[in-house]
Length: 445
Ligand SMILES: [Zn+2]
Picture 1 (cartoon, rainbow, N blue to C red):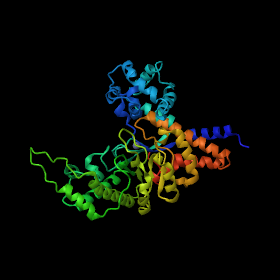
Picture 2: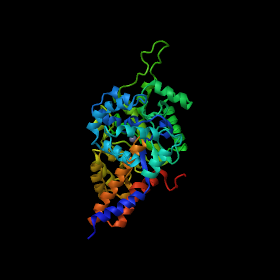
Picture 3: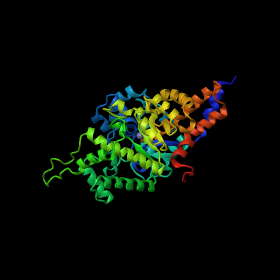
Picture 4: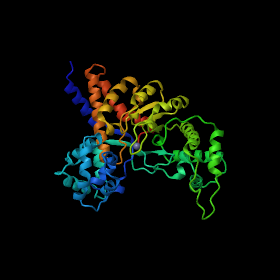
């Protein structure tokens, strides 16, 4: 009879030594925060949206970012909302991180000043030693797949890129073109004249290839924030008809701007968008790039829950059978739909990025079930999906605990041996993501 505490201890120690690949991150480079961060600003980057969901008015939220305000004033603004949200997983992750980094695992009247001083001091140095400590020594994140709207990456970061209008310049937002002005931005930046729909498609193909040559390792689709994931298989002619409406809009005379930024309404624009999304899948197939698709829960206000439903991608998965689709955030709350899709379709990956930040216990239950349902090579167990190193560390602590606790349970049940459990841990936290995004190459040093 195996002793449960000993099994968990062995797996926890093993997990602590394992490096991580973060499948998805928006981590702000150190230089952008150096000399410009404090406790409250860091918290806004960590989870401002949870403060808003706790009822914080937006004007107050903006004031938290103001580095010239004294900490006492900010604490008075922050405290009532922090008290409501502190038990959410985002709250817990922040405290886990501050505990591990600064030895202060509490945020209250007695600790906020000291914690604020620690944050200011950590970000004061010219050298990014604080990032090295948190990411390298504490979180042990070795490789990051970075969604930051750029191909210029820090060391050991590899870019995912989007072709839509959030975080990426209009000139690259081929999926969401809706106005004549959008087309003009594409022409201007990519130095071309677009006279027909086919010119437009050719330009997209060329820009896509330039991004591949520039180091893009994955394509990201975030359209689930704007619409459902039913990317209908529209014909070239149908898409061209919408494109022509955008293209042929009479340019306003100087001084007469009434029609500037006019475009078809969404029901029509969707036809062109669907076509472009299929074009993107076609190109992902050509260049053998994985496609990361946001599914499930959306961050922020005025979100529409049904936009996240990954079942609507079923036909896409079948049609593009050689494209690897990485369905993100375990598609919470559609996790079991995703698991069932991934069970049958060998090109569908279950990605755990961000899940622990939403709910570690929900994520843990799902992880235990998904191991039983889905072949192991298609489980991507960690992605911080955070703008901060503190958030990255919080997510890393949760992910390691999730993997060790679930696997320890399965070893004690006799479902797995200890050796198998360690193999699974390495696969889901490192090997699978490295192979998926970087292929057989060893990461650059
Ligand atoms: Zn993200």
